[in-house]
Image (tube, rainbow, N blue to C red; front, side, top):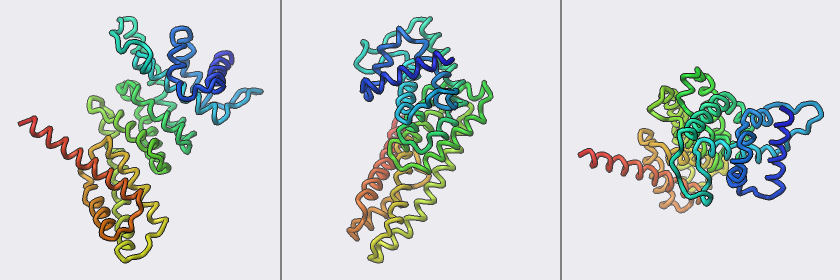
Length: 305
């Protein structure tokens, strides 16, 4: 309703004017007991972000949309986790049966709403790093079973397409890590959607690994020939490596053998002494993740024996 959307807007205005920018979670927690219905009116928040304003209404500014997304994420987190942010409250407590039911109902409701609308929100804000980083955190609070029981697979496919587009558009580390974590949240073997997500993730990594190896070959040829690497070539190598590194943090990419190409890059960099610093940094980070995943596998095997 108009009344409810004005209340949500008032909350956003207060949040911005009181300069609580770093503390959305604490604002939400301080109002949780006295304004729960408003804070959990995700349908209203979703409409404010996606729908055109009614006649005579001012649309939200870019800053206000960013603030609303941040507040919305905090309300979803608090509803799904049922405990206050760090520093408020005395740690985790055992939930009553009534609280557990409310938590279950909230997760069901937010999943049914955002499983459908999240791809639209990501499409609308796809070039805005801050908004996308917050929106991509929503699936970790979903009840993934609902994708199957609610017959929402086509919306999952739409979400996976949006994440893939965002990975291709952005080089910002926060955005890329949020994409990686979203794949991780969706890649749960207990749920029927696992294969769908795993195939989409594998196709994306296939593309990134092929592109990286292709670009790297030409780039290293230039370095070995004593030429100054072309700026655009260096940027393409760096941005592709950034994407792979962000994914390697949360996913085991051993079958793409990123060690060989990164080792070659670092070896030629040492021998020629003319490798852009950021490329070296990300190559080292990627190699670090390769080694950590291998160590994890060795530990698992030794525990089995």
